[in-house]
View 1 (tube, one colour):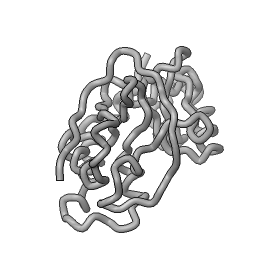
View 2 (cartoon, rainbow, N blue to C red; view 1 turned 120 degrees about the horizontal axis):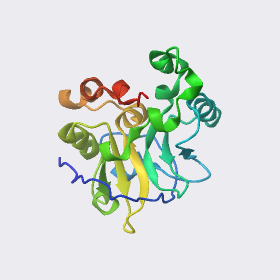
View 3 (cartoon, rainbow, N blue to C red; view 1 turned 180 degrees about the vertical axis):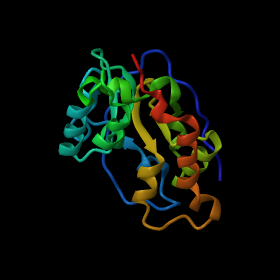
View 4 (cartoon, rainbow, N blue to C red; view 1 turned 135 degrees about the vertical axis):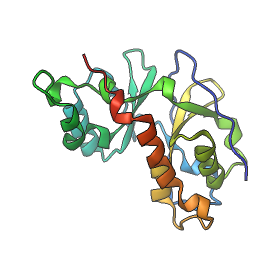
Length: 196
């Protein structure tokens, strides 16, 4: 097993396009676990969209994770449908900030907190390698950058584990979700919301 080399994004990344969703196991090719960006299959959300509206759109599209983009189609971060839910937004509602005052940009995981891997490196990598990489870098999301330098996809640990036909056999891999939940708590993802 190996870990993938990760790197930070440059200041302006645009989104590329690609394919479909499959069932996974530990030996599946890593590229099968990638959530591709495709204009027909996965919408990107504008950063300025109100959080409740974005949540409704993601529910309508049955999308769990979307990219957040600016008007130039550059990626600003990613957003999970759960982060936009009424239950989650209720944590931030006060007398001056109702649910509609929060935007996708306020609730997203920003680009500067995301690591990326090169698409070339996925050629001989497996799902087990991707899971090992999540543990190694203590992140539960990794963007994938193509040869042109564009974001072409995303690895999300929770998505991968949900799509696996068989749970990984090694005890370390069985604990990936627990580890990633601890990472979320230690990074205080809820605290990333910008309070004005």
